[in-house]
Length: 79
Image (cartoon, rainbow, N blue to C red; front, side, top):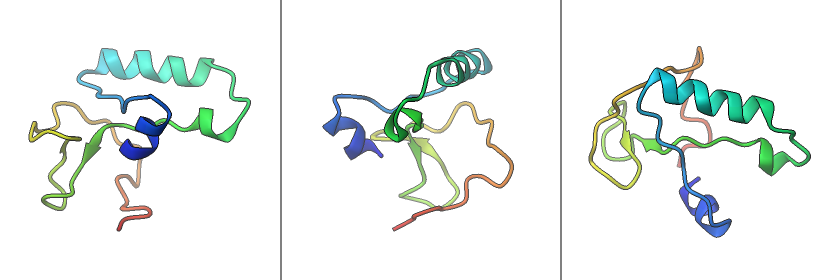
C-alpha cells in the first residue's frame, strides 16, 4: 500500500484518535467514488516486524488508536 501511494504522490493515513477516525470516515464516505482506486483507503500501520504488534508504517511507534472492522486485521494478501 505504501509503495502504491507513493507512486500516486499520496500518503497512508495515520489515525491517532476517534475524532480523526470520524473525520477520515466522513471524507471517505462523503466523497464520490468514480473509480476503484479512489475508493481505496489505506491506513499506515503494519505488523511486519512482529505478527500482531502493529506500528505506524515506516516507524517503530506503537499503534495509539485502533477501531478494526469485525474480522480485521485478517492478513489479506499477506506476503
